[in-house]
Length: 284
Image 1: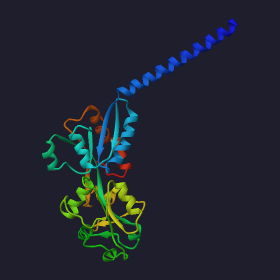
Image 2 (image 1 turned 30 degrees about the vertical axis):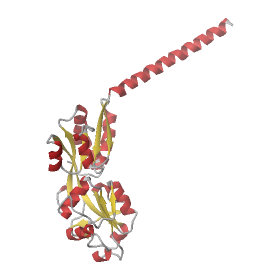
Image 3 (image 1 turned 180 degrees about the horizontal axis):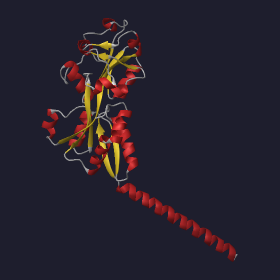
Image 4 (image 1 turned 60 degrees about the vertical axis):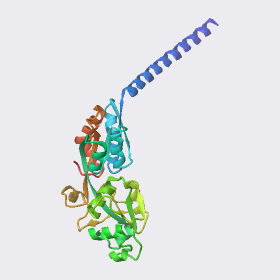
């Protein structure tokens, strides 16, 4: 009986010791997680693939900061930092004069890459021979003056026209370059998409669509076509030969926090720029 009691005491002691060790380890892990400072990044869906992969690598390499990424569009990202809701805004265009007037000129700009706004059509349209359009033709499509592919050397089919949402940096740049104003009316548009991935899905899922999206989204049924005789290729964008190109930015409102600056430095450094290339962007 005494021996049995001793065995029970020993077993309970071992179990208690194990519990203490587990709790200590857990407490240590919680302390590490609690001490890490959040860095919130929001904005352009075009920049998001670069930021997401970079954040994953950055978070794995250090324990001082935890970077989280969310989309919402360039305009929403800029609003987020101006209202101090986020640390960094992703932007596929520069800050506008209207935004400076509204929020003040305290924005800090950091170039993180380059991209092309690529015109793309459904595979059926590309295979039918529509492999390039002029500025005037694209303008007429989005203005509603050209509505059938046969007017452009394609099949007898209505053109399904896709645009981006208001507040999108991609939309602002496209409208300004092609239509002459970022606020231009586009009565020819049939669908408004809220991200480059959505544009790609819509084009590839249709047999008569046209849209514009980031260079890194091309392929998989969204075939890139020439704009004014120049194809959206890596070299053409890098050499500024393809007119529908733009710079990609991180913005902060005022001086970046320590965590924001650390992440910005990582993205602009060799590792981050390699990620940019791997994700289909042109390095800064």
